View: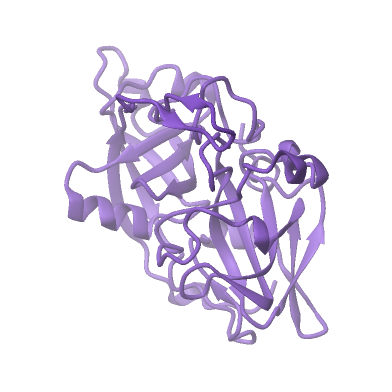
Amino acid sequence: MIKSNLEKLVEVAVSGGAAHPCACKEEHVAYDGGSILPACFSGINYSVKVGDPAFDWAGAEGVEPGVAIENCCDEANSGLVFAACVGNEAVIVEAAMEGKEKLKGMPGTVTGKTSCGRVLVHFPKRIVDKLCVGDTIQVRAGGQGLALPDYPDVRCMNLSPRLLKALNPSEKGGQVRVPVTKLIPASLMGKGTGGTLPFAGDIDIQASSPDEVKKLALDQLRLGDIVAVKQYDATHGGRYHAPAVTVGVVVHGAGRKAGTGPGLNVLMTSPSGAIDAIITRKANLTELLGLQ
C-alpha cells in the first residue's frame, strides 16, 4: 500500500434527508437547438444505480443514481457536501413509514456529490424500494485532508480511506499508478471548469459533440466509473494545463444542455502529471467497493 496519512484523518458525522426531486417550469434550449424540459432526476431513484450506463435515460438531465440526500439547513448542508467522501459509510437513522423500523441501521455507501448540493448514497435495491422522502441518513465522513507524503504534487480530495485502499495505487518511475476505465481529453471538460468546487461539487464531461462521443465511445461510460482526464489540473479549480492528470469518478449521467454531460468528482489531481492512469474495465465503484 502506498504511504499515506490515513492515521491522521478526522472523521465526523454529517447527515441529510432523502431529497425530493425538483423540476424546471420552462423549456430550455438543447445544444442542438431542440428544446428540453429539464427535471432533476434526483432524490430516491428506483430505476438508476451505480454501475448503470451514464447515457440514454429518457428525458433525464444529469440523472443521479441511488439516494440523494440534503440537509435543510444551508450551513449544515455545506458541511455535509464538503465532508462526505466517495466510499464513506452511510447509515439510515430515521425511517418515517410505519413498519419500517428494520430499515434503521441499514448501511449504505457514498458514491458522489453534486454541485447542486446533494450527496449520493448507494443502498441495495430492496432498501431503496422501502425508503421515503425525508428519511434521515447519517454519513461517517472522512477523507478530506488525505495526502500521499511521498508525492506532494498529487492532491487528493473527496477520496475516502476505503476507496483509496480499494484502488490500491502503486508506484513506478516517480508516479502514482491508478486504475481507470477511460482516458478523457481536457478539451471535453465543461460545466464546472474554472470554478472552485472540486471539494464540493462535480465537473462535467461535455457530451454535446456527438462526433466526440462516438469517437471516444463516451456513451459506454457507466455511473461509478473511475476515469482520468489528461492535461487537466483541478488542484485549485479545473483548468487546462498540459502536463497535468486528474482522476475522478462518474457521479451523474449525461444530458442535452450545452457544456454538460456525465459529472465527475475529483479524487486525485497532479499539475505535473505525477499520476499514471492504467486502463482496466474493473475500475468501477461496483467492483471496487462490492456494491450490490
